Amino acid sequence: MAPPQGQMRPGRQLAVLGLIFVVLYSLVFFSGGASGGWKDRLEPRLGLDLIGGTRLTLEATNSVDGKPPTSANLEEARQIIESRVNAYGVAEAEVVTEGNRNIVVSLPGENRDLTDVGSAAELRFRKVLKGADGSGAVTAPAATPTPAPSGSASPAPSGSASPAPSGSAAPKATSSPSAGGQGGGAPAPSASATPSAPASPSASPSASAAPVSQSIQEQRAAVEKKVGPDSWAAASGLQAPADLTADPSLAEKLKPFGALSPQEIAVLTPQMQFNVPTITCAQLDKRPAASIKDEKQQAVACEDGAAKYLLDMAKVVGTDVDDAKAELDQTSAWVVSLNFTGKGQEKWTNLTREAFTNEGGACDQTALGQDGKCRVAVVLDNKIVSSPQIQAVLTGDSQITGNFTSTDANALAGQLRYGALPVTFVPQESQNVTATLGDSHLRAGLLAAGIGLLLVIVYSFFYYRLLGSVIFLSLVLSALLVFGALVVLGRSIGFTLTLAGIAGMIVSLGVAADSFVIYFERLKDEIREGRSPRSAVPRAWIRARRTIISANAITLMSAVVLYVVSVGTVKGFAFALGLATVLDLIVVFLFRHPIMTMFARTQAFLSPRVSGLGRALPARSAEQDTPRNPRVKEA
Image (cartoon, rainbow, N blue to C red; front, side):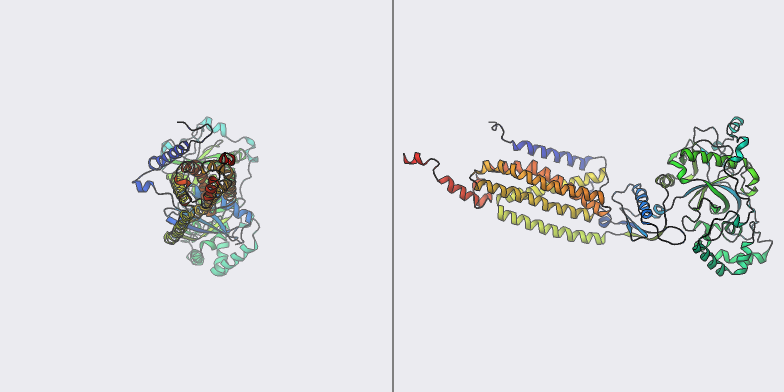
């Protein structure tokens, strides 16, 4: 017989709950991310404190003077580094500031090299003025043939002109621009009004030097004292790379510069770095990050660790690049495509025009390519990525090409896309974290949680008797829902379970226990007011439901606010707390109330000793013994 109108059908709610379990665990066992045996499919993603991983500490400085960065710059750097770390595809990476200098990066899972995430990624396009040998061989002549560049900056495939790399570049990768192509991009007679010509390569160091800070002056004085006054005077007087084979005494004077550290080399003037042959590319490449970031000064950088170049001021910088992405070109080689901003495109066109015409002979013979054209160096931080010769005025987007792997190209594109860091970082500590400590804490935490849950269940059966089974089953179902959700979310959105997340789930159990107490005590009140157990169940549910929803809503809102304003493991705590609270509400509506309705129809529910309703039922039984109509009894 169908139930009376308005009476709930508990079987429907329980069927919906069963359907949720079927769908959830179908995703657990058969979703696309599932692999391996059934045990592997039941493993959630674990965080660094549970499974181990990599932790890197970066110390930030605002410049070579060693001053700490501002809080705004440090926070901006933290956000950029977090974006770079997330590009590894590992969830719940923790990037937090520590003090006024340090940023700590924690990445769960397999051990990785994270040193690149703190690189400055300062992109500069500089015209090559001079070239020299950077190997430090004293027997080499002052001017050596320019090596073939390792890469080229070329227009996008839709462009009409392509710069031809010199050296052994494959002919199919280069094409000389046609006459029409040159004519279309050739400079007009007024081209000399475009970016001013650089200082003559033979100009004195002070010709284009910017004001030097007191700290830099002090560091240069310390280097001068270290190498000696004679060596310093000899190096300062050089106007071109010295030929040490022609003057052995000069070689002896310049020898102390080969023993300087990369930090000491960084404070020398660009002319001294270039003209002193004993300053090698090995020293220049290891200079602190952002040593040549000043776009208004000339700089010295190396390519392939052997060729040393004196570079002009940077006419195009990283902020002029609108987007960067790694892709395969027509030859199936990995390249990084650069899309310039409106102003950036204009700067790039002017720079290629300046290099193509070589007005004033700014580029000497050691800087020209095989076709006698000036070259533009693509400088990333302290190193030259490529230095193609410019064979036409480029008016469109370009590509950075070289011996890139997929990983290298994507890493470079990511650094350029996410932006240059506003501060300079020096890796202080990189360590591989084992899960030993986290495992011991996890065992202790789970043991404490298990003992606590056991005490709750024992107390529930002692105080609520039959109703204790409802508490027990509800907690079991909530735990199964939470566990399945953790596995699925770990595969779909990369959610990682940490000790903080486990703590959030344990806290949610307190909210679930409160809802039990609210419901059962409301049920007792209804029975004490004279209602039968069967009629008391729906009325108690209606009155308790508002309180239960309100309590869970407050917890959920707290979790959302905490998730929005927090970072790192605290964010994981908030997510786990909110997830467990939502799933507890599902169990409340689809299991707890329907099962109570079914229990209310059983004979055992009417027994105080079995149901756990305590003194409420005896009062109701005594009330039932009193005749409802005394006049009928008198008759």
